[in-house]
Image 1 (cartoon, rainbow, N blue to C red):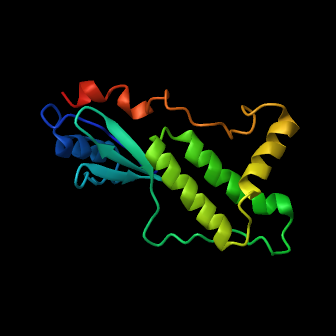
Image 2: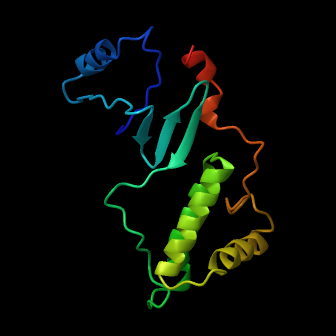
Length: 162
């Protein structure tokens, strides 16, 4: 196990005691704490933002992030080139982003494609060809975002934030 995210109520949990307890389990593991800064924390590839009675998420990119993917004009097989594009699109649709953050991420993906020599219709063409190949969106993971979806994080947030 590499990374853990623990959401806790500061009034009920002494996080230092909890980390010490984890560290006492075995000398081979060393747990450390990274607390939120300014009501947010980055965890893996997302930023989690604490709001009044909820959590919201956004895609996180490290400061060293570059928008390099296999360029369109490379000699790599087309299916290899499209893997990164599908990954970016699937990631955007896997997390329950707000409409504003979804639009922002979509723009970032379009910029990545442009900066690597792909035309604006590449993402649509990849997503349509996969839908036709498998017959449904469900198999590709390239599903549309709907505003009715709730972030997984928000389900228990009212209990945690009480």
